[in-house]
Length: 289
Length: 240
Image (cartoon, rainbow over all chains, first blue to last red; front, side, top):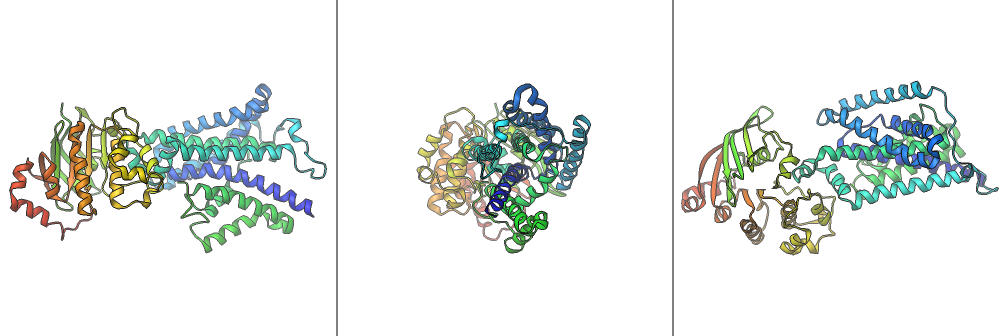
């Protein structure tokens, strides 16, 4: 029993870490630009497929490094060419745009790489268990946790200690004032979008090694990521992080005790949070906005 | 070179016509006060100049560049500092972080110099913007605008809500901008304090310039000063 609990706890943490990585990117974009990016799952899938295609040439490590960056560049282009035009309009416009983009991504991926899942290779030594007693504790799972932790730490360092980060945080509350201080807010929003998409691409490269890779890989992650944002509290990035891990672990634990409710539990949690504390766990304080 | 030249400005909020053919000028090294009752269009004039509420017609030239259709950040990048109404300090950032937001234009103003000018800010540099008093917020908003190294500074009601003693020290700082080679356009309700440091004044009423002239002559016209200064208490407006 201990093994089953530990297994699902670890699983929940890892899945939660993906939710968090994805949700942090979504939050960044939502906070600064007011855009709910439904195409986020598409970017995640694209990151994974790029890694898949790059791996034979530059290996797993090269792909891990390069694929999220390429994805981020595509994100910069999409923001520059499409999303930017809709700033200042009713949020419905950008919602429809990113919703449409999500479908275009999915069909595009099907067209290029096929509808079936593709074999996604991770280094053999990472795939093997670290211990015979805890067979599920593979090197890859530990590795994913470390990379996600580094990425999150890196994000918070950028936001907390660089001018870019300060401008992003200032802009989430008052973009006009950032602009009258001479900061090119178009570039700021563009870079911020790219940063969010980088996180999605990274999540994709990592997740494909655990969940397998098919064009719909983003679908199973995007709704829980929105839930993570709401549970953690809109506008609070630390909240988003905690929210992601929390619903991941909750789903993992539910698998042990009440398997059929695994999918539902995160929505129940969201409903509970909305009833008890509508601003989310960290909605009003503890924010790094 | 003209520092700021505004001609025939007409600005609307939705269908409300706020500014009617507003024209004004700030020459190099001048401190110009823009006076008027609440709702006269003073804030709107500044917002139109910095590109936050673009004018529907008319023109704005800053340092001989036509900036009428520029976005705010391009106008600021020319060297235009703006201290908005209500300070608009970033509440979620520390004092020091607030000071690091502006574009890094080269010039004499550094973090160190701003802290020398406002030692209070140095003491509170790790405090969040939302923890500051009104006077400290005003200092922060001015310091933040100075770090852009502006050649033209626009201030919107720096005295608003401040104790008389603090108003005095804020105005001393504004007056000292002349020696820094910074031209100033000052919007104020506190007419007496404003005319004391200004070279020239413009008076706005109902979105129109109704008076322009030397500050000294205006200050000597006690009736006129009293009319404007006295309007403060019962004034009310939804725009400014």
